[in-house]
Structure formats: C-alpha cells, structure tokens
Figure (tube, rainbow, N blue to C red):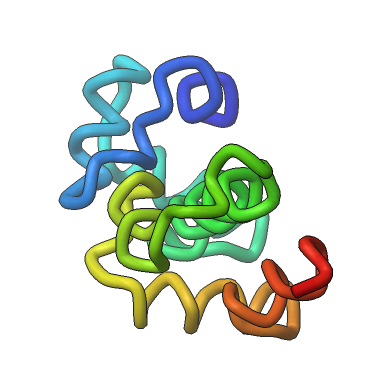
Length: 106
C-alpha cells in the first residue's frame, strides 16, 4: 500500500476510498482495513498522512511561495484548506501558514 501511495500518488484523489486502494492493490477492502488496523491506523489517517507530507513539501518549496493555502490543499488532495490545516496542525503541531512563515522567515 505504501508503494502504491508513493508511486501512483493515490492520496491526491479527493474522494479516494478503500475500494479504490484495494482495486489498485488487487485485494479487497477488508484486507486494507485489517492491514491498517495492524499499524494502529484507520484509512483516513493513512491517506491524510500522505496528504500532509505532500502539502508540507509544497509549502516549503520556494517556487510555491505565491500559492494560497487553498491551492496547496487542492494540490494535496484535501477537500479544503481548513481540513489541510487541521491535519497539519495535528501532525506538525502548527498551522500551514505558521510553518511556511517560519521556513521562509516572513
């Protein structure tokens, strides 16, 4: 599943489902759920971890300095900037804007 997520960037699809991942992995939804449960994750946590990682990469690239939070959220598979911010804050301890300012020295 990790290889699929990294290589095919399935997490960029906003409405990604367990069925989508199962289809790509040539398995079933139950196996996906069990595999994630074994890691202490549910499907949303698994997907959002990839989305957060992608969003942070975009936020920290100088060439993306002109992109809005909404643009970054859209490009990362989040439904909206607020959802992205919520997950980034939970993961990194700070909002997207605060992290970007800290890195860019603004």
